[in-house]
Amino acid sequence: MADILILGYGPAGISAALYGLRAGLDVLIVGKDAGALARAHMIENYYGLEKPLSGPELAEVGKKQALALGAKIVDDEVTDLFFDGNDFVAGGLSGEYRGKACIMATGSARKKQPLPGMAELEGHGVSYCAVCDAFFYRQKKVAVLGSGEYALHEVSELLPMASSVTLLTNGSETTATFPGTVTVETRKLAGLVGEGAFKGVRFEDGTEEAFDGLFVALGSASATDLARKAGAAFDGANPVLGPDFQTTVPGLFAAGDCTGGTLQVAVAVGEGAVAGLAAIKYLREKRNASA
Image 1 (cartoon, rainbow, N blue to C red):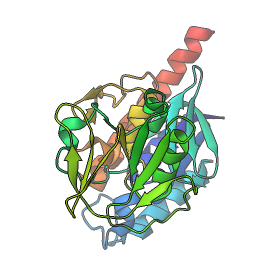
Image 2: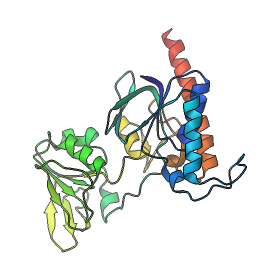
Image 3: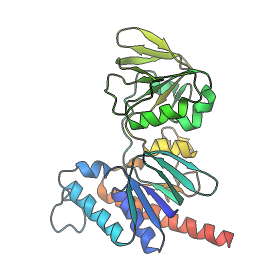
């Protein structure tokens, strides 16, 4: 059990961790990789660098700095997040992680590869959270759009509820092993079917298939996906954030590229600092209130 659970070990996550560690708190960082920083060729426009560093080099320096102060770092892909009444619980492919406060620093949200009709039907049969919405599809025919581990997680949540689950890979190869009870459809999609409510999908060959619900699980779970799972309020496509980057769920924060805006290392570090300090304040106030 950590005081602060941080999802992502890019600049925002590491920055938040440093503040938590310096405050004497137990910090657990869970991440899949360093995000966009890991793909940066050379970083020159950042304060304090004696010489340019590659993105992976700067990411490694940050991780070493956090470890030296006592952080625990786990390599895992988080697919789920919820508050159990006492703690935030993040479900990963390899384990479960808990924190009294949680900071989402998972980098910029992946592109959803929207299909025609998807945006209009979100919340009307199109969902991004099987944990949240599987209950509404008991004994119904549903589809999951995706092909990897995150899609497998959503499929696993739906199988006990739905009458049938079909995986729509939209032409991609599967990168996870799906149960034999799941129908895998690899044909390319042309769009969604339905006006006002989702009715099914249309393939590029012109044929259609009816479904009661569609769950989008492309790539890895982004901060947006995790915030939805944790019950945070949204303003359009983005979670509502206060000036301290706290969501509408007390103790749940977001920082870095996942908040949008200027996608720069300096900005991510600054947001991580603000979120880290806010998490410290939240925990101290919570501790004082229970004393």
